[in-house]
Length: 222
Image (cartoon, rainbow, N blue to C red; front, side, top):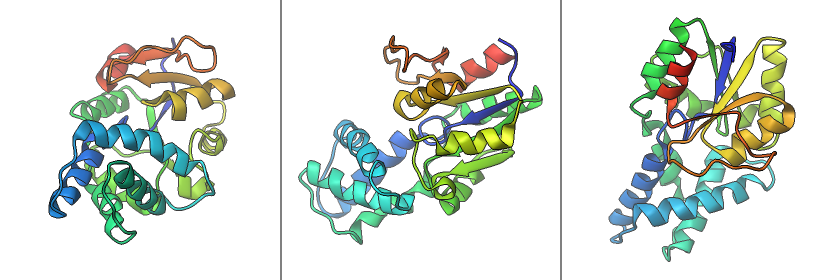
């Protein structure tokens, strides 16, 4: 394929190791309360519950994280109140990039590719996260700005207004949040399949490109 003029990225799960961040936040909070939780159980529950919370009425991502934390805790037989559940949103600024993230972003930028982020997050939280990156982004579209959460189309429509006719590729780690809506809208996509999951075969969910990490994407476009 031709090198895109711009690549938009999902952030948490694609650029940022949110699974480690979320699991560590839960495990640390449970330990302070005198309990223990397994990483596998934490994220399995989280991955099922968060999209349900996001799919309701729009609320800030801090509130999404708080409500999700309460529901995940209950699913794991641990009761916490809304104040105690703030540990999750409080931890988000400390979640770190994957080891390949900054190297790949720098390589793409050196190639002349413009970079942007489309993320299900609040503006202030993504600002904290961006301190972990070694490259600037041309623009960032957040859930707070469009008042909806992917896989709703708000992020992508807002990005299209900014991008215009430039060659655009969207890269994300979630089939549900990123690949399905980009296929529906006719946006070129790349699945960052860090877990080595089976590639979907259905027309609505099949990614155009698949890479095991961002380094693979950067190498392909080099």
